[in-house]
Image 1 (cartoon, chains in turn brown, yellow):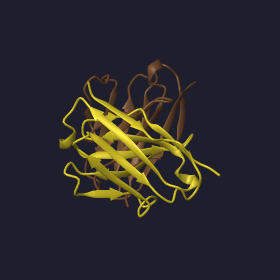
Image 2 (spheres, chains in turn green, blue):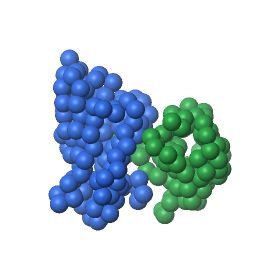
Image 3 (tube, one colour):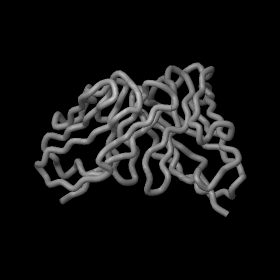
Image 4 (tube, chains in turn green, orange):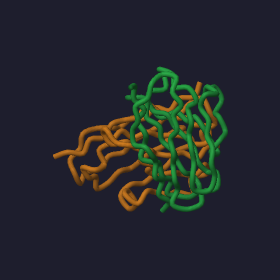
Length: 107
Length: 114
């Protein structure tokens, strides 16, 4: 099974900050990775597919990069509505696996 | 408007069974592979199972293999998860989802407790 190691597990940041979250795969997953945002009590919402493709309607301050085993989600200027938990998901092979999550909190 | 509505969550004792349902509308149900994803209270997301669009291919997480069965009834636009031999660690909100187009339900809570 492919393990997804996500870091950091939590971070505190201020509105306007640049935020970077990383996921590392235990083996090459090409670009078969998505990034999800989840707010309390809600279902996850995909922000990025295929490692770097911004989903329709997602603000351009979100971006994804990487391929192979190392991937990054960047929020260029954190907004109040971005405080949430973020997960990566590899879909290169079954079983699918999520990263452990990154909780982005207000500083 | 796409909707996925899960139901069937309940409080059950360890070792018992439960069947979850996910009723879909607003998209061509039979064309989509569908997944179950769960989230234990205060924990992260865990992928559980997938069924292909034709129902012939199924995969499971190791944690549920042999105990859970995913199925679908395209005539009813409904996805199912039969959960047997439930354990306390199966306590979670269970979501149905179509990963490809990122459709998700609102989740249904399963609590396994004596």
